[in-house]
Image (cartoon, rainbow, N blue to C red; front, top):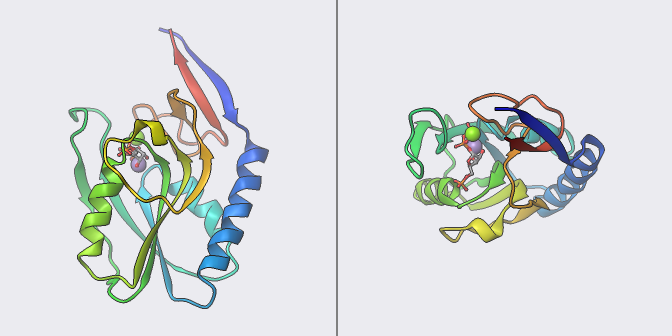
Length: 173
Ligand code: PRP
Ligand code: MN
Ligand code: MG
């Protein structure tokens, strides 16, 4: 089987959009105590770039949820790593690379809301709203993504291709 990569959002376009998101997030949280919560592993490159585009310094923390991958039934969700921080009374911004069915986010939002944060919002680089199986609020969106299999800038296939500096469609034939 051969694999071809077709660029969907190039490095410059991603960088420009992340800078804009950084400004939007900065404006939304001016003067507040914020915890950026990255959803590992896919959010890592986006979170790093978003962080550097902010004009304030949030606390960083991470959770890990996996829904796709070796040995996991489609739709099955595994909660693999919890926060270290107590988020009670604090403003939480969940950072995702992509929102697809919404299942990962719905799970995380339900779980984290029980800990009584001051607020909880979502920032995702990519969104596939037409794929939603559960309704989730998404507050900051980089791009609407086309209905193709995406890799790069954190997104993987079998743990490969996360390091690619831009977003590509993976065409397998
Ligand atoms: C991917 C992606 C999102 C989630 C979106 O993560 O990074 O976290 O799926 O899909 P959903 O909206 O249908 O839940 P994945 O489970 O592949 O784990 P990873 O980030 O470690 O690659
Ligand atoms: Mn993920
Ligand atoms: Mg994955």
